[in-house]
Image 1 (cartoon, rainbow, N blue to C red):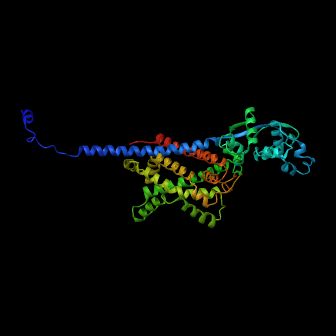
Image 2 (cartoon, one colour):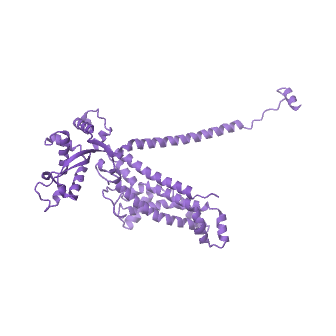
Image 3 (tube, rainbow, N blue to C red):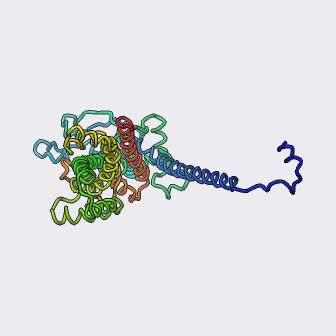
Amino acid sequence: MTDMAAMDATPAQRKPWRDIGIKRRYAAERRFKAYGLAAVLIGLGFLATLMYTVVSKGYTAFQQTEMELTIHFDKSVIDPRDKRVSDPKVLLMANYPALVVQALARELGVDPKDRTISRRLSGMISGGARTQLRDMVLENPSIIGQTRTLWILANADVDSAFKGQFDLSVDESRRKVDDLQVAWMNKLADEGTLQKRFNSGIFFNGASSRPEMAGMGVAMIGSFYMMMIVLVLALPIGVAASIYLEEFAPKNRWTDLIEVNINNLAAVPSIVYGLLGLAVFINFAGLPRSAPLVGGLVLTLMTLPTIIIATRAALKAVPPSIRAAALGIGASKMQMVFHHVLPLAAPGVLTGTIIGLAQALGETAPLLLIGMVAFVADYPGSPLQPATALPVQIFMWANEAERAFVERTSGAIIILLMFLAVMNITAILLRRRFERRW
């Protein structure tokens, strides 16, 4: 009856519809979701652009152009007066590049005695060939007079031209590889003498002014030393400070002041830690510049706030009932912390430590101030010897003008990103492996 009465009512007699804003609230929710989705897509777009830029420019750094040449270790070139027994420097100072030029001339069927031809042939060979042949002769002098087939590094300009990084259609006066060298390059490539091979040198070589010889071996060792120092110092100090502040320290204005300062230190620009390390560790303590020990100490100071904050958050996440139960069965406060609370907080502590190490691995600014931007070609034997670091090596290569260093800069960035990805994945796996939910 009521429905029929309502249907029979005229429009003027019906109750007015009350607008409670449902459509407007639903529209605001849809806009919020759209904004969030747009933010995620923009972030993914920038990430994809970054990865494409780095990978597209850097993947060629893992290949290096080399020539397979038959080298005759001619005694008339290495030791024409037969003085190597009385004067070992003869083997050090021999004209080894001439042996490579002769081998390349035989391969191409040209006369190496022609100075113009010889100069162009030399321009196709890396200066590292001298070191390669010299080391072979010094290691085994009996090789003099013998013939060996070796892979010789091509010059960086030939390497770039062979990889298609030079526009060979422009006039030869505007490029570093002339037409004759391009013709020789194509002939050698057709015969299989000139090939792109895996560039292991980028992982094992030290710094070099020749791009084809430059590698990140010294930088990797330097970063390894620094990370070990950071791990050994920052983890126990950071965990101990966190346990004291969270479990034992009285709650008063002094502890509040310390907590505020720790939180602020995590946001201090990293270059400030570099200035601190320069003043304290080098100028005051007299530690050597460019040493991984100083770099590790500076990065330890920078990483400590991150580890302390992460560890305190992990300790807070342990339910109070665990503490109450441990104390209830007669455990002391220290036993409660080290036997019950800290093991349960270990996943968070490990995660914070690895994230702190990953942050330290990618830092450049503080290392520049303590002299780790040095040209170091030899491996450091200890943390007190000069070395450089992965991000600093990238910074140095990025400032080089030669085209071949561009691909090596991107290649080094790929290596650094791989290290950071491995560390972050390890943190995720450790958290999932040991995580407990209450």
